[in-house]
Image: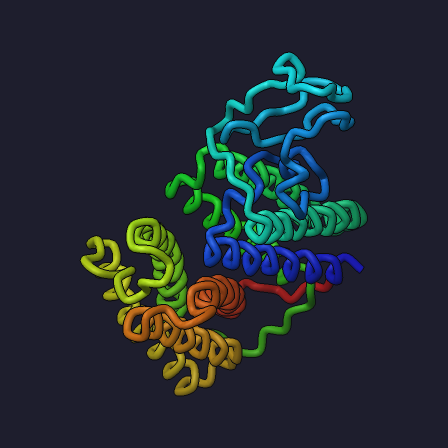
Length: 344
């Protein structure tokens, strides 16, 4: 049962990453300008009229309206009269973004909903880990660490909104998601039976670790490139896709050059795994994801950002990191001569 909930948690975290990619692609990051609610609602509005002050209407404390291009928050439960009374409202002070776009709002809301579901799954996983305490305290401790990290990730999400999508905070938010993925994969790995039938050269394991670091660096660089693209969209418009990468920053060129190194390193890993019969079958998935990642990157640059190329690029990178991390664990255990198979 425990491993089942680890898998559910892992799938939901990846769905959060997918939803986050759609948020970035559609520019919906400020679709819900407050946190954890959305315009003061647990279920966000579907029409701008719901965010417009209306006479003789009941408002709950914390509900939000847009008044004179500012967000106003109901100070208490009350019913409006025939005229607007500023005494009943407090200005929202976290930022000055006050735009309602129904599509952006619901895309961001779905992203938050997936985050909440992943939190519930991880909490259930942690509770089930209590029964592992006598056999493997490590599993219980790391499971509750996952709960803490997800709470920290939720707080980071709030700071991203309050900062109006500051690039550094978006990057940290993305990296933290990958840290949670890695932790869940580790829990999945150590909670199963392992059979060690052969060993792997230490140099090969080191190359695997190097490839994992390269992927993480590429993710960080990619978020910076994406920020540049977002800024270009603000300048030239969404329709002028051919101009989005005109005169890019040096980060773009580093990101592009590193992609060649990523391909070469992972091609070497695939070749040596096959040559020496290490039996790391997931290396085939790693190499496939590297090629898909390269293909979406090439499509964005040379074919002016085809539909879904941006979110797919991020999704493939996240999947690549996860599979690589799991392969590193497999290879590390098989490389260690003192490893003993364990049944949890």
